[in-house]
Image (cartoon, rainbow, N blue to C red; front, side, top):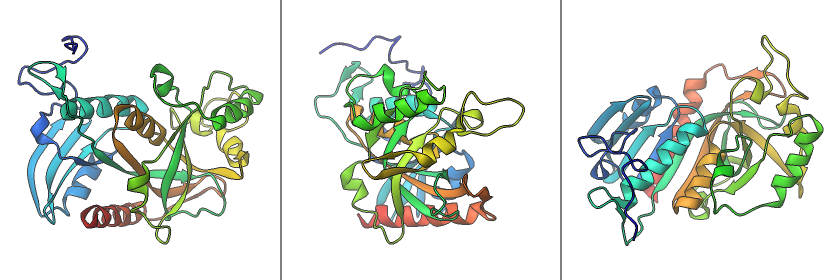
Length: 290
């Protein structure tokens, strides 16, 4: 086994992982990720008890118990660049011995649930609905730096469509939800579909403020895109990176979306906190029952 150098796995003087500032015993095997720092306490307020809290940069962690189930909730911040940090450091916490800097002989698999917000790309997916991502397709290029994610036909088909509109530097990647986690979420409460992950909130999501877009707005391209009778249902900024890294690192991940906006009908939720809270409660209920 090869020892991991100090420059590659950076630890703080107290022995915690560099960005998250966590030690292995401070995270549960079941983890909820949220983008917004304030949403951490909106999740943990439902815990029966909280054993640990930490604030570091944009990463806030609460670990506690609900119905005897140990759960950690962690804010990632926005975007797959932060997902890159969070997922790699969570894997290190679970699977690397920080004293020897060797990978553990027995691999620990984490179950990671994203509770996030999203915009609909289809007219018939209304605001204030809940959607589970069966797959993510990344427009952010993060996974082009990693080996191990299988190639998929949809990547080339979407790339061709993007190139027609001038977006030749985007190299889409495709990753699927963990099937065992997906089976816990029935379709009576959740819509489902393919989620596109964008590298930004403004031009990458087709918004026009004080600039011009390179080509046709991304929402229009994604709205019209079809592959094997499937369509892209919604977009946000983390899901594809989560699914890709979970696959490569050997963990389970699922992305759950509160649809706050419909970018085709130009509607936005009048009470976003209410639908996010509903998603939190449904997710926690499913976690403790499984």
